[in-house]
Image (tube, rainbow, N blue to C red):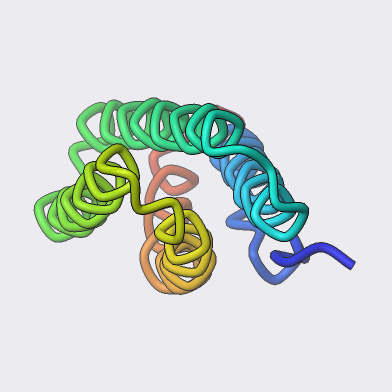
Length: 137
């Protein structure tokens, strides 16, 4: 069983956003499994980098959508993105300084954060995108 289970409850009903979220779930699971399997710091670092890069790319895509539809809650949504990036950068720095144990903490943080962010924040964004007539983006 995967560490982080994708379910229909996590779907926001927007294909682009859901695909990004599924990829993030896959990367969190890959990181968690690598920790469980005792993979090398190099392997963990590679997965962490892919996760951080994809998170940034996902946020950029969401932020472009928000700008495009002139999303009313954009500032609050961007603030959540910014806070997560700050937390992740602290963890990434700790990992790069030799603290490999932060890899599991990163997986735990992202599983929790993504679940709550999707359920509370991204579902509102998806509804606004649909209301703007861009549901299939």
